[in-house]
Amino acid sequence: MFIGLDGGGTSCRARIEDHNGRYLGSGVAGAATTRLGVESSLAAMTKASLAAAQDAGLGPDALASMHAGAGLAGFGRQGIQEQLGAARHPFRSLVFASDAWIACLGAHDGQDGGIVIAGTGSIAFAIVNGREHRIGGYGFPISDEGSGAEIGLHAIRLSLRAHDGRIAHTSLSHDLMSRFSNDPLAVIAWAERASATEFASFAPRVLEHAENGDALAIRIVTNAAGQIGAMVSSLAGLSPRVCLLGGLAAPLRRWLEPRVEQILTAPVHDAVAGALLLARRNAICERARQNAATALLGR
Image 1 (tube, rainbow, N blue to C red):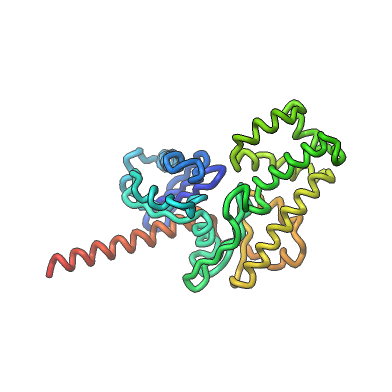
Image 2: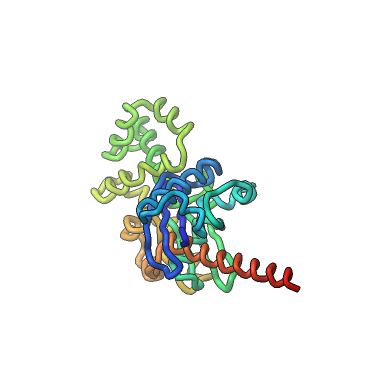
């Protein structure tokens, strides 16, 4: 059996298939981004996998017979690959990649193409002729332009300005400040320890206010759409196809410029399908290595 895992900044999704590609079960757990630590990431992966096994009517021991492929947010951070490689896991085999890599594999069914992910974070990524192309996605707050985290950050920042009287209050700024009892010190205390996921939790409220015509929300969402559009345009010069993915893909599309909208194509499959493809490819490579070793021993 094969299991694919999409470990993002908000949740971790798992799906199990048999060797014929038949769906068996799926499960969900909390954030699996490596920014929360490798142990936390692996714990979320295991929890989602056990939920998928239960959904498939399998016991927890079944994971030991599964080839797993996992795409993780924050996979490219220094030292993470070494830590993941040394960590114990419950699977027969496990191969890692970035969340962007598996999303790109899934979106284009393993063929050449590019993606722009707009979710908790953001990144533009393409695989063309076996080469990886990356734009942005260096992590919040220094990057991840147009992401949910950046939308939340801008919303908090502008709400504080409105509280000070530097800009006009709107329904959005009143909404956000009321969540902190209109106390800037409470905002500061929260922001000092808030993660990208927690900042991104405000994005749906910002988008809702923008849909209702709030000037401040429209300013934030228009900026986010412009950032995402710039990544789409940049990637279009490198890749034959570009898909827009992520939790914010659908709500942001109506805010994109028409020229950007015309570039985009529909994804073939989701990121979990890409992780399953990664697992299958790794299993084939592992089998080839085993056969080669057996052949050498037989000489």
